[in-house]
Amino acid sequence: IAARALGAAASGAVERTALFDLHNELGGKMVEFAGYEMPVLYDGLGVLKEHHHCRGEGCSSLFDVSHMGQLRFDGADRVAFMERVLVGDIAGLEPGTGRLSLILNENGGIIDDCVASNAGDHLYVVVNAGNKAEDMEHIRALMSEFSGDVSMSYLEDRSLVALQGPGAAAHLQTLTPSLNLPQLSFMSGERTTVAGVNDCIVTRCGYTGEDGFEISIPSENVTDVARAMLAIDGVQPAGLGARDSLRLEAGLCLHGHDIDQTTLPMEAGLAWTIAKRRREDAGFVGAGPTLEQITNKSFNRKRVGLVVEGAPVREGAEVYSEDGETRVGTVTSGTLSPTLGHPVAMGYVDRGYFKINKKLSVKRG
Image (cartoon, rainbow, N blue to C red; front, side, top):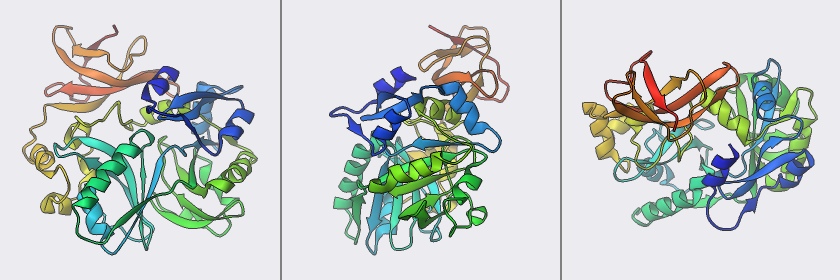
């Protein structure tokens, strides 16, 4: 996991989140990831314990995800512009709601996946850490061609944490007395006070397969909020290692590994992010190749989940037919599943081989 983190780091100076000192205080083993020093695990815990804790009854785990990019879009024509940038139905978002969406290139390849929310008087978009500079460059290029009223701001003065696990709602509720968390549905959010800190944005979403929340917090106050969360019985810190194994168990993509700029939504199993209206108006970048694959089912590979026998398989391992004679795909992510007790993986296999319960073989290298 540390090797993957180092390999994913962006070029240039390594940055630190506002929680860097707290990570060190808690015994975080820091690695370089997407241009930031981030904790991969914590002393006295480790990936397995952190993973199991996040899935444990009545438990929740606190992740620092402040390396992610938080963007704000203003202007009377912000929705029309973002429907050029994103594949999703942004006009259909009610205030306080959001959805997973995709940023595509002209060929339909996935530049990034993101969460876009209607924050009332603006749009709030969270993009991946390793892609945020390229995302913003792409968006600015599209903005230069757009004649309407729209502006983009990078919220560099805000941090982002994720509280994930079966106990997350109960734990967060103790710090948000003005917010009725049982009534906050998945992919909905509200601006509220958390642990006495104003101007926090609480969104019910996450990247672990568990119930949970992502909380955007003014960076000057994020350490105080994190300490308040960790003081709650049942809350523990968790690092990138557990975040990776949790998301892989849940079948969630990691950009740069399971999806990239050569992957189209249909191949990735993400065509569901493109609503019927967006398929009809075809107004987003990359619509031509993307909709051709969806309409004509012309894709020749598909992302699948793999149950692995024997030792774990890693990214880049070659997938073959059951008899080992024909190469049919490639593993993009793999690990030992702590919950299941055996290896799992994700990857792409060719047409004719992506059937449920299809037996395949893997060359481990």
